[in-house]
Image 1 (cartoon, one colour):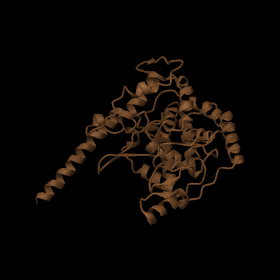
Image 2: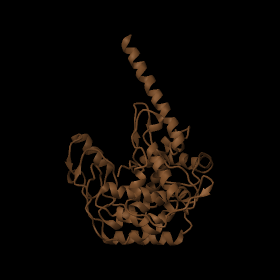
Image 3: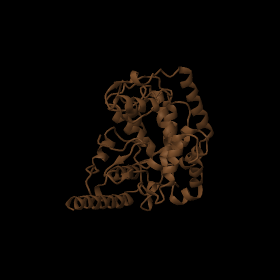
Length: 347
């Protein structure tokens, strides 16, 4: 597949002046019956394994220097197309389950992104998948840093979950969607040690064993995480993503706080009904100000950066139309900057 939507924490930088991150467009009800163009679109009752690939082929993934092709716009177009064609995600879930357990990292990660398109509907499916005990060695992980990675390349996306354990892989997606901390994280990836190794050795390939020691997550911890997730879902059948986000920001749990802040700043594809600038100003901004004084450096840094976003870029970047405008503005700023540098060189 050519889908370029990445994990929520990754950003897409394009020019020297600006970094743009495509986000999620607030959609309608999370029960899968969101109105589109004044009507509720019919949803297929089932799809075959090639359905998603056929939708992907309808999107022009080429990017250029115009707002029309700005990086991230195609991702948003695909998200909107899929939610229009399949507003009830349950038709997709059998295919997504098969893809999520794939040995190919791109296929599995793509399935995780698709599950996030249907947050409330996906939860019972993922809770059921927590019982999977098989281990599947991931292939084509490139510079992904996770328990099970054999090489550290001096850079890469960190996902601190044992993704080769299929139950934990489902737990990773579940915790990402819900902003919860059930206990599926591994706790083996020490980012400070990774940073120190990069400074000491540069961007050379190293065995992961040289950087950090990784043990297999004990079975009793996995069972406890499963029990926590099931108990939470039993008590929260009316869950919504917006309520989950607010709960994370006020939880006092640094992992959940960081997840919530990162979602607002970088939540590039996940629907979150009701997350608007008005709601942010009335309910979220005060919590972000409080978190800016957190004793946790990561939480504090994310909160401060979000407070600096006085123009609501985090929201504008969640829509095709506004991201196109931002892209065109960035191209023009870049052109002006290069023109100024060229003129300086002539003086």
